[in-house]
Image 1 (cartoon, rainbow over the protein chains, first blue to last red):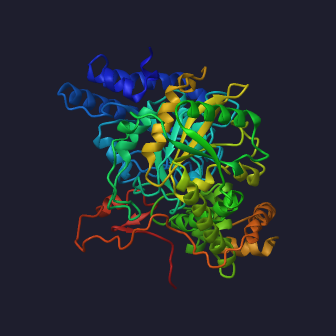
Image 2: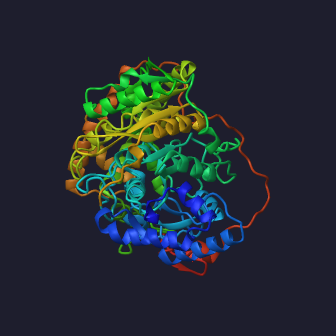
Image 3: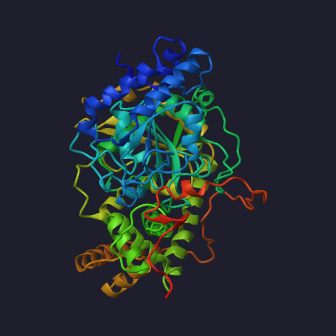
Length: 485
Length: 95
């Protein structure tokens, strides 16, 4: 088979047995990119020379018997994580030529594990969006139907994995930006518990929500990447000092005795009946594997979109205040004075969606409105967290859709930002509650578009999520289908 | 809740954004719709509910007060739009 079609764990075995070399594997991935990238447009920056050098170094290590789980594995990184020496744009004109002088902790860990960094993937600007259409540079196309969105904001990473343009990828998720593109591209995506993965070097969008996570071809690969990137980091004061389990061991057990809750509020009017059907079939499979499924209630679900779209933009307006043309990034050099420089730089550097969110956020935090908007939203957030706490008293996991419909057409929602926000209704509540969420493929629409299943768990219980995901995956074959490119 | 053009212009000033007339028009309309939707939160009685901004309670995250190496000055200046004598150059601030 073509080497680029391998999973991380399959490639690992072949590398270890010296049946293939890391150089061959990386070269195959770059060949694949040459084949399909024109159609998909997943990558903003490719680091070919550096990647081939990393592959050679990996071969040398493997030759000495000094290999690890990710040695020589070609991975893609969402262009919102700092990679030393490799341009990091965040999909924005503001950082079009920004070259970070340091590595994010996650990238540092992957480099220490001798993974190969293929390049940086496309995203909605600064992580703000659900379709990757808000990238300042290019559109990414869903490999399953090139006229459709790949999802967002980690659309480039998800598309690259689905198109075999890497063996695995790293994305980030604030309100669903790993789970939703994974669902739309038919791949696996995990948003860890807040505090599980270091945010050092992740360009900040909403500091109380942002998390980095893996996007992979199957759950075993997800477990391998999770093990590599999780862990306490002194450079991130929100990083939680908890030991990292070997997630691959969690995959070994079955689902006997597991209780899965189905939130009844997620059965909304806008839910496509094909998504609903795929979810029901997935529930049946999981019951067949020994689990018990029962209905639960998350009464404050309907308030999640409003809560998130007050909290996140407010935090973003603060985090994006640093882009002022002074120390790095774009500067409008025509300005006569400092204030003009700030305003012109920011207006030229930020796209319309980012400006929209900065304005919402600034408004929500401004004098006279703080209590009514940000204050109120923060209280509702507590109620949403309580909903999940209650549900997890009687359930081990919750099962839910990821998106109300399969991937929509490029351009379809650009004139209606509110409609775009409403499509996040299933991924936002878990983000607000800071619980982990795993997306696995669970079916396809009549048009052949992927549909994902969301598995939600208690704080720091990624093991149970992956156990459910793995058992479900092994009992189905959705993850084995590939798009025709 | 309807947001007025005047409010949009004021907020844009706070956020150091320059909006032309077309942009003010568009954002006034879009933000009006979005904020009306946000008003649904007022249906909830949140009296006495504490706000959340952290999920996992960790406190006193300190490090030892020791000097450790920082990024050297030249490296910190590599992305500077304009720099001189180890400093960032900006338009005149005072006077």
